[in-house]
Structure formats: structure tokens, C-alpha cells
Image 1 (cartoon, helix red, strand yellow):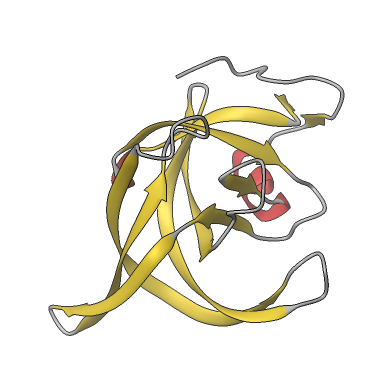
Image 2 (cartoon, rainbow, N blue to C red):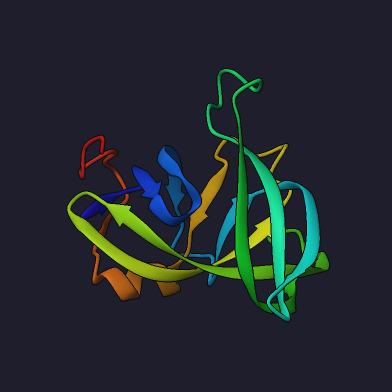
Length: 139
């Protein structure tokens, strides 16, 4: 069981703790990323990007690199369509750790730097308690 917001870790990206909004209305998970640059590594597409790891202190920035899994059009909640990079990463919620697809996008205007969509929730076999928060505790 998870609440409408949870603490998550993205260990493959070096992110030990990040507040995340659990959103059953969103198909895909999304991570706030800025200065996203594509590069080649061993003949494959990779991205280097930066994220804010503390909502209260935007000077705390993590540099991440990940292999590009896909680039596809995504329609946001306002109906705007944009091309986004998708990466794959482990996500840890409580004691569970599993792979999910994550789109990289600017979430500057959003309260949460990460959104956990219903595809990821299905992977983790979670039930959402929309009236509760942080049921899985802090990592």
C-alpha cells in the first residue's frame, strides 16, 4: 500500500531520497530533468541530465546519466504534446525495488520533482490509499 505521496530512491541514478507524487491518472512516470544532453556511449544513445534533489534547496543538484530506452510523444495533463526521452531505472519504494520506465521532462512549475504513474504502480503491485501519505516511510 502507498499513499498519494511517497519517498522513493533511484539508486542507479545516485538518488538516495526524493519525494514523489503517486498519480494513478498518469500512465507514465516522470522525473524533473534540466540541461538534458544526448551523447553516444559504446554506439548507444545516452542522456546526461541534472535534477534538483531537494525541493527546498534548489542549489542541491544531482548529475545523472542513463541509457535512452525510447523517445516518444507524451501528452501532458493540459493536452500539450512534447517529445520526451524515456530511461529505465530501478525505483525503491519502502523495501521493494523494481525497474520502471521514466520520462524526463521539466517539472519546474510542479510541487513534486517526480511523478509515479500507474504503469510503475502495476509493476510494484501497489494499492493506492489516496487519503494517506508516506506509508512506506523514508528510505
